[in-house]
Image (tube, rainbow, N blue to C red; front, side, top):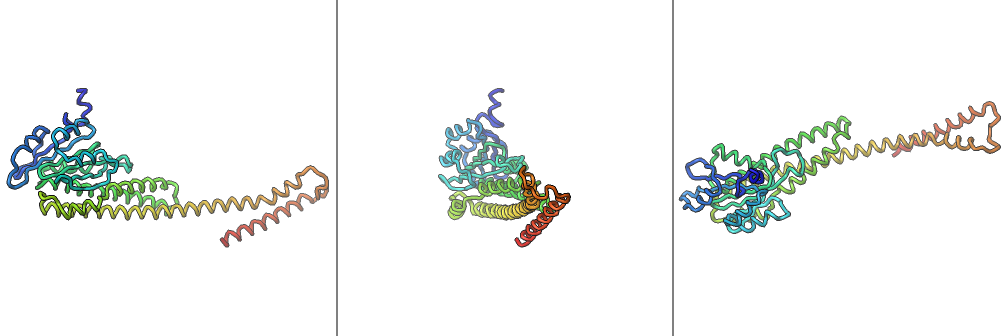
Length: 339
């Protein structure tokens, strides 16, 4: 029992779930041993018999199982440890190697909610692996459990990209709602309440777009020269899925521009408010200057202070101070109006 606690929802091989897809029948759940036995069977003429194995990378047995049975290409194993995790799909040893970024189930617009799923796809096998539970890959599993028809292994990858597009649409929609609230607050004059929200939202969207945007070069090469085992229908659906993905990314880019404009507008409003406060402070300083100067001069403990013995001395000095104050205020206000 204590040993199972370190499997993180997977079995002793690191497998979280596995399915076998056969022509004319519903997908059936299999374990790692049954998957190896399935790959040893001859493939039917229809070419529809393939398996999907999903692994947990936090289980140390996962990579050992990959190496032991040679289920994936070396490029796939190398991609698991590469620092760059931008979304890309390439070809290696006649297999599709996909690095796809996804969001966690409880996405809260934090950079830590973005993680990666790695996939190796060939004619008979789909190997996927991740470190944390992710939304889109779970949607694909739900579709399998509901009996959705998958004609080939490439459809698993295509379905994942389309589910990811749906997840991004939800994120963009929620982001638009947040931006609308910030804009309403700005129009109502409540700037300080929403300034930090825009910065956080923009950083997350920039990170999402940078990680999720597929590398055009690798995808173009793949679609121009697909592997020999990939059917034309699969290549066309993969192309359509990437186009839908690109549309969502364009919407995300437009939202980033809108956030940038709002930030600039808020910055301008804040600068205007600061200028207004600085002007008030300047006026107060200018108005207090004459009385401070006069008070300083008359307060010196020396002889010869004017009007010291005059019974109307106070009112004369008071009138002089008021006069200087009014003149200084008029000059300051006139200069502010000219600016």
